[in-house]
Length: 342
Image (cartoon, rainbow, N blue to C red; front, top):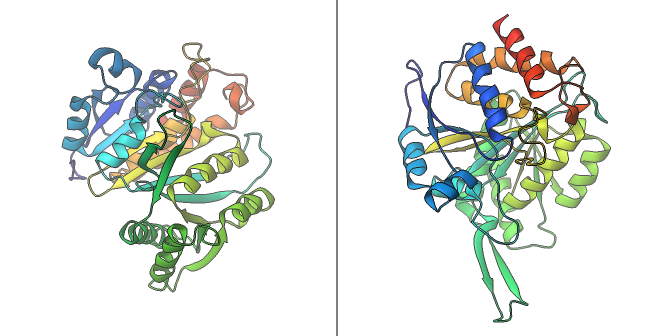
């Protein structure tokens, strides 16, 4: 794993499927323009890897991440109700990237229903309903079961991650989202453990909300939320809901962080219907790269990149159509590069 902040970090670059190569290429240019110093090592995953290696996640890609502990990834296709296991889930599980960090912010100039949103979702990334414990219960395929597994150790470390993040980033409150009224053992264990962790952070307010009420409150008054910590499935759903509050998935980056490394990505999909048409929005991947730069200690470059994206989003003629603009991948990227270079 790359450990020295004084040397140039090496990061694995996975271009992804669909619009992935377009948004990742644009992001690599933006990182350089902002003064980011990253040595990229390319690896493949997803559909391209499946064609070339017979697996969506080749051992060479796993070895590269194991060696460097840092990656930027484009979106990867995951078959629905069949096919190969999600590469995203496999990477998180293989390297125990237990904390999924998803900041959600309003951007001036971008059409949305709300203004002034600035919240962060901290999602447990390794267990719950996504623990991968599934089975068919009947030979005719009419009955299937998924087992949700929650452990005290995983709940404790994600709670500590959330409260530590709140403390180090000047946040005032952590909201624990659960369904312990119904899922009394699994969600109850998560809530009980998080309550215990919260007592060690008297400077950070803690409140609790049932997940369905959280959805309603987010739609009614999203500005009141600061940091949300929750389980895997709930965090996945709430992340997309919150993206819709600020203009869509094209504006929401994510980090997957653990002791063995950190993987940065946009949360949107591969959008194969617009791949190769110059309509893909690279903003989320660029914002993910800014998170990567901050993670390795290149905070000035991270700030320049973030500010360049924000400046490009102000102009409708350079924004892509998914966020109310008339521009293209190329026009948006050119604007980001211009602002990043100053």
